[in-house]
Length: 321
Image (cartoon, rainbow, N blue to C red):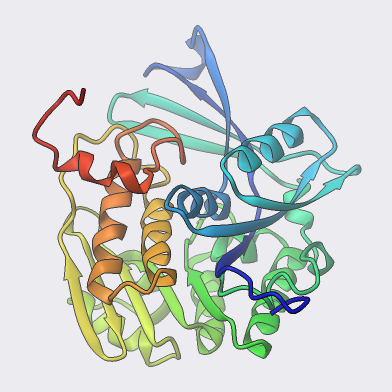
């Protein structure tokens, strides 16, 4: 409660969002006749996904005092996300470039060393923003960016715990930012302060070692602290362990265009249903649906669905009039 008024439940997240340049057609980037300009970042992708599903959400970040920073702020706000952004006059907005070398493969190059987003600091997160939230969502990408970004994440988690605010953590390992060992060690230390953890099967192995069964990996992750463990299994769907009970959901089959951002879409769907009071089964069902939607469109977040669009994946009528 703030100022005597009961606030609507909301999620808060923080991290770096970068400008994104991508070729519209497959082939060598050096010969691309045209390039598209957009934005992308794991935490803002989740925030946009939540907003489209009707969840109140706020995102904290830092951008450069440049045109790309204006783009980041404008796009996230346009999606209905409350933004708390510090403009850094001494560092540029980060940039990533996607090259689709073949129709089935792509690579992403990051230009984020010394970026404004990597200079995220604890005082970039306004007072009471975390404390008044329903849930704080963070990812391992932020922790890997820099010591100051890691300190910001840890400070936000501590603030959430002190205020009895639930904490969600996506391992979200990026080998270009830190080693497998560093990522696993950070996650193991953090999980005792986390309520919900998301991990791909390979990421779970970084934290608790390889397991033949996803159920066993989830159980070992839960043993480190979280009451809710979600394992993303790609084409095999997903599994969750909630208060000791296992739940599964098959993947939704789609004609894949671009898998980048599908994991963030999955997280957004899961958290949206969790905040709305959905059961563990309902959380997983929405998560695999939103993850599938993200694969249908090129881009990190552009294909994220709204609630009224969720039935499109099972709609047998190709044209709605």
